[in-house]
Image 1 (spheres, rainbow, N blue to C red):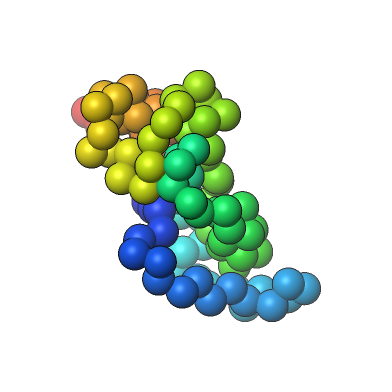
Image 2: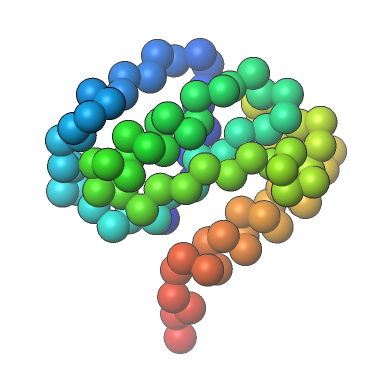
Length: 100
């Protein structure tokens, strides 16, 4: 599983809006793209859409919509990082089978 966020204002290159090229190496891989209330990132849903059209099992999660307010780009380093971590851990536990 992959948890990702945009970093450093890096350009995002999305595939065409109508047809996405299948990417066999990511087919079916659970991916979580998160954005935070004050991160300044707004194109998470379009990135997730491109990943899904390419075969990934990608989802967008907006921390603000989960009641986690005030975070910026580095949500995992802020004072409420444990609350953020619990959201990520819950997602991982849903997506990955427990190992014995």
